[in-house]
Image 1: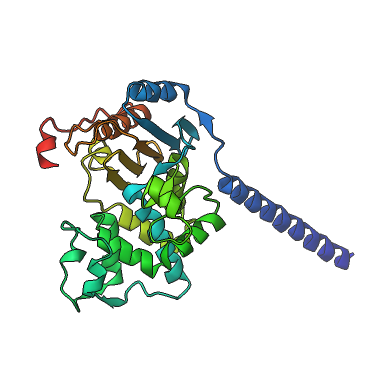
Image 2: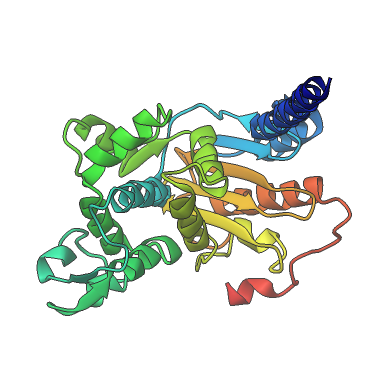
Amino acid sequence: MRTSNIEHRKFMRFNIYHCLALFIVSVCTAVAQPVKEKTDAALQAKLAALTKNFGGTVGIYVRHLKTGRTATVNADTLFPTASLVKVPIMVGLFDKINKGELDYQATLTFRDSIRAFYPGDDEGLTAQLRDSAQVPLSKLVMLMITISDNVASLWCQQLAGTGTHINSWLAANGYQHTRVNSRTPGREADRKRYGWGQTTPREMTELLVAIREGRAVSPAASERMYRNLVRIYWDGEALSQIPPSVQAASKQGAVNQSRSEVVLVNAPGGDYAFCVITKNQQDESWEHNNAGYVLLRDVSRTLWNHFEPKSGWKPAADGVKYQ
């Protein structure tokens, strides 16, 4: 009888632990499952109104991460990346670091030949370095992302294994359309059509979301990349329509006939991410009121007010003189 009681207690403990384990697994599985996407009809209508008379082609993808609400305009159409390409370059670089092929804290030696990577660049800080100057790789990445330094970016692209390695990572991780074209064998025709790189609004948004959620390269690499992306100098467009007290990760791009920005906002009501890209713009000016810049601001303001209707925040009336 005593042996029977012992066996019974063992059996009961086993059942309790087994049920507890099943409960934990079910909870973890529920958390890991992505939120089902659903079209936000009201937001879709707002974006349609904003883009209706735009002089050129517009692509937009928006996703509210917590609720799964989405809105799209040509979200799967190919567009030039311009400097948005620096996000996949950074990911490719961090893949090399994660594999032990590069050291994020390594000190690199600048050579005059590197300046020739981007002829005519007179704005970037890297191009102003003297031969033999010592530059930490971590600072080179900062220059590429924060101020969009072109020479630093092409140097990083070379260190990342060129567009060939970056594109291999993108393809292996489900990004079918986002590619680096510049200085990448076999992509000369694409470079002629799209420039440095090409992407879709949906894929560029989801790449930023992957970084935010720790799914790009590794959790530690994603964390470092996200920190880099919240330190942006070029904050006069989409970021100008988000309260400065709210953190946002972003990257901007611009060439004559295209303006673009990808943003992930850590909003009080839940993170939302979006990408706006234009091509074939009729307005090729570089002034504050360029049609593409205006669209970026209008979309960002519309999204903030839509997802945070109780905020009441508005940009300062004379803020433009500080941008």
